[in-house]
Image (cartoon, rainbow, N blue to C red; front, side):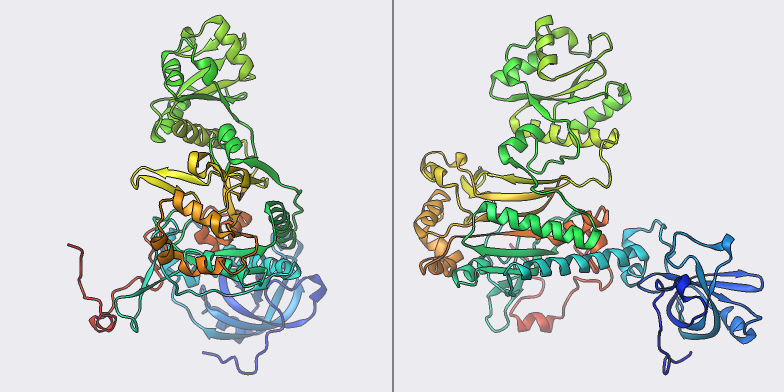
Amino acid sequence: MDSLQGLKRTHHCNMLDEANIGANVTLMGWVMRRRDHGGLIFVDLRDREGVTQVVFNPETDASVHKKAHGLRSEYVIAINGVVCKRPEDMENPKLKTGAIEVMANALFILNTSKTPPFPMDEDEDISESLRLKYRYLDLRRPQMVKNITLRHQVCQAMRGYLNDNGFLEIETPMLTRSTPEGARDYLVPSRLNPGHFYALPQSPQLYKQVLMISGLERYYQIVKCFRDEDLRADRQPEFTQLDMELSFVDEATIIDLMEGLISTVFSNTLKKKLTTPFMQLTYQEAMDRFGTDRPDMRFGLEITDLSDIAKESGVSVFKQTASSGGVVKAINAKDMGGLSRKELDELTEFAVSLGAKGLAWVKIKGDGTLQSPIAKFFTEAEKTTLLAKMSARPGDILFFGADVKEVVCKVLGELRLELARRCKLIKPDQLSFLWVTDFPLLEYDSDQGRYVAVHHPFTSPKEEDIPLLETNPLAVRARAYDLVLNGIEIGGGSIRIHQQPVQNRLFKTLAISDEEAMDKFGFLLEALEFGAPPHGGIAFGLDRLVMLMAGMDSIRDVMAFPKNAKAQCLLTQAPSQVSHMQLAELQIKPGWTED
């Protein structure tokens, strides 16, 4: 094996072009692929920055050429050589270095490699479990390098913008106390305090409010958070968020600052100029028009409420549903009347899987007549009213949902996404940002038999709704806001309660006693009594944001060392069992199970 001593790299493998022709260079990296063309040996040499083609010619140096015969995939090498122009018929316009090659006159094999468990080529389809087990190899692949680099650039852009706008980067503890925040805590036993446990933070919520009470005014950190919940493509047990809190602000100030932040991030990293201000919808508008509080605004397919005309409809299921307190809504799928019966059956199965009892549809034929199993139940007057309200024309197809409001919103909200995918209504490079505001402050938990906070119990109600806390809690709107990108929530926050009387009224509505409140949130409640300023904050899911910016489908593709769907690290085999001695030190009984 050769030594690196005395060798110095002159260029990385994405640096050379025609301006360097004739230069003597030293490159270092991994053998991406080796091709033996009889007399000549070609090696694609790869490092973090890119790829350069290296040529070993027996006429240049026979001993170096002979040594190159032993090169294999992922060998670590250094080469010295002269930059030459490639023959015109061998240029590769896909590579930045595609117009040149390096004619090697020295080869140093710095390390060998076993045969990788999967091909290292860019476009190979590799199982995720294999990629996670051999993550150190997966991270060598150009797409993963690109993703991790983008993540770094996003973080730097965020820090730069916030530093320029008066924020302080402040760390908060990883070992804290367990507080109810909507998911299971990860617990850490305390050896020095037997029988007591820390919790890993689901968010720095209470600490960042204390920082505002401390008078630090503007705080941020890029922080790890932990939630013990079932996983999916955009969830991990440990995830990263850009967290911040600001004093003496209202919703408009925060929204304006955050639009500047996101615009700076996209401009600095992807060279994309965003149009501001972003669209805004209230929670109720979003649910009524799109069936979800995180609508994808890159296409239409809005939902129309037909409950008023359904009460007089000849379609019995529509009439019964609307008359008994349910809703009847529909989507006009413009110009999709050509969907086949097979496709309609598939869409019906899709709707049923979401909780619908079925999926009624009506096609508008070229002559304006209706084609549908339910068409015969409409009177001519009802047909006219329906088509007018739906702005329907020949070639369209209407899809109906009739059930309780929650089911109809869920089914039609997902159906519009499925129709957009099937009919290719979404442009892959399109960006659509949306603020959703005025969320409900509370919801009723039938299992607990009480009201619970939709976000957390420190979210401020809208001032005009405070009197409703005792009389109509479900009508109280929160001073909360989410930022949605292409139908995915990337950030959310709220203005907080900073006055003790309002906090006490909300706790009373939530059936939280004074004793329970002090036990769970005592340090914050005490702090609120010492001149807490008006404040609010927001947190962005860094993993989700970078995933969308990189064009990936899973946040695992933009994290260096993610867990799999079972919350396992296949690289390190975590979680793992520990010794009885370790458990004994923590006064935890091995093999304990709840009776």
